Length: 564
Image (cartoon, rainbow, N blue to C red; front, side, top):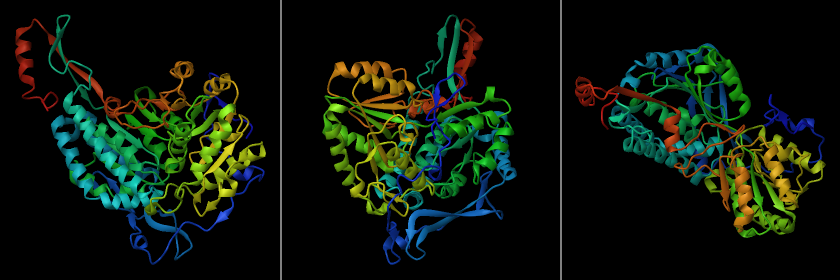
């Protein structure tokens, strides 16, 4: 508890990924219990409660029967009929041996780069992915409904996730069609120093994709689709929370893609991932999640020197409110940054540092906005909805208890701040947060909103310098002279600096990068294509007439060089 910052081998701070159970803390605070967020038996949405059968294996392009252990998947929304979390489906719990079968199917489809998918022309793969989107579109209503029930994403955000994902796919295809080298250059035969060369991008191999519950479709597909378009083969580790949505897509993959191009692994990551990684069949990993799991996966590979890694990791983004800030704008952006989708975003503003001279007014404005947020069920378009992770409320309770014990104030206690209605955690606004508190360093990934006060800008610089976070920051100010030193300092500490704007990933054309323990690689429409491909050059001696004649005809006979 006292070790707010663990140290890496070089002495730099790294995230404390081992979250401490609230049961180890003295109980300075216990969440007041309210009636749970419940769906009435006689409601229209009760009739739409999904019952998704995830007790099957999707390997080698086929739905295969599964007779092993399975788990019931429950919604964070309570069922009036049982008084408990609603049961909305099942997921197969594959063994390590069964998971390896998925990896073997992927390796067979790859066939050391000679499989049907990697040997297709780029135009053929684009056509297949466009067909996949048509098949997925047929499932849109079911997918949106599943996102509401499984992870309590409100109706508009659930629909937005599906639509944004499809828009991302279209943008990736447009980028490839505009320039298949993705701005590498030499898309046509180009002479340099007596050599004529042409460049295309080729696949890496078998990709293992892992994405979190909060954007299960969008974040997985932001890696998967560029990887597939470039000719890679995929193994998807389906998340334990938020995984049901993927089970709805199996038939679309089977209809649109050759056998084995996409394979699912369900069940415990601790049981299924080590044997897959230890097999050495994985060539590239696409990972969005925590640092501890990422480190373990890399270490489990027998030849880590050839494992290409793309990872978007943890974030503890700080919003800095300077003395001259427009407090209406600052409070609104910090509200959005800290509470959108219950703060369950790696890009959320997870700590605010506010100058003493404006802190009272800022906190009052922020408290008013937090208290005005609607709270309820996902289909009620509520801003605050139940938390999908069963253990999360107790973890957040522990963070609040620790902060209060060390002198922080729960500003909105009288407005149900920190109260728990089943799985719905009412946002808790903490003021007077200091570096001694867990909430100052740990990534809460939930609706606990901490405000730390500072009197000297040196305190802000020290916090950024000491932080393990390298993702984003937000600066609230109207003064260029005040903003400039922070921008200069942050330019080597984070991947994006927001001015009078909450932290976020969109738009998808803007590079989403990170430093320190927040990322390995950059996500955007163009960068995701680059991340899952390798430049391949074809070259000949410029002065050799027979080679030039041959090269000029290649685009008509080579699938790799075929025009789009």
